[in-house]
Each structure stands twice: as C-alpha cells, then as structure tokens.
Length: 128
Image 1 (cartoon, one colour):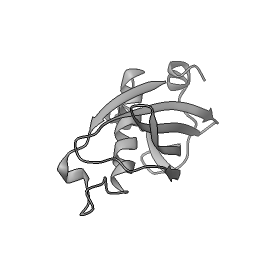
Image 2: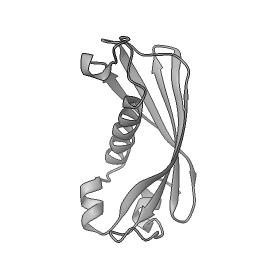
Image 3: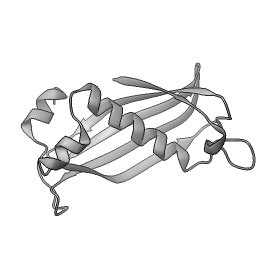
C-alpha cells in the first residue's frame, strides 16, 4: 500500500469551485506512478525494456467533492494480479472522509501494444 498527498489548486477546479471530475483520473494516475516508483519501477525505464502498462478499465465512484486548497490523500494498493493484468484499488480521502473510490485495471503490453506477461522482476517486486 502507498499513500500520496495532493494539494488542490485553482486550476484543478471547475466553475462551481469543486474539483473537475476528470481531474480525479489524473490524481489516480499520479498515485499509481508514485506507487510503482516506491517499489523501484520507473515507467520510463520499463518502456525502454519494452514493457508498458495501459489502462483497460476504470470503475470510479464519486462520493463527495474536493475543493480548492484541500489536501487529499490518495491510497493505492494492488487488489488483484493475473498473467498480464494488475488491478489497483484506490481511495481519495480528505481527512477521514472518503471522497472517491476507484478500481483501475492495467494491462501489461509491449511497445506494439500486444499483451504480454508481467515480467518476473515486477511480480517479485510486488510480491505477486
């Protein structure tokens, strides 16, 4: 499990003063990238080794809005792993309040975007 803090800036909000719904996808992506880095995997280096992870599916449930100047915590963990897919469970909270619950499925692919097995070093790094 990994946690990332995110401060909400004015450019993250819409005309109603709340975080624009699509921006949560960016926040989730940033948190997954940080999760991978904490495990010792950098997306740029993986790409150089012909290993990419692409989003296949996102299930997101918006519970409460975030607003300008809020500090959010994004919690990320792997909830399921298969041969070529990783499923991430992510929650965005403000203090103890759950704002967003999301499940994102990533597929491991080559640079030709053909599915491929998740490399063994990554499996070991995630204890899969």
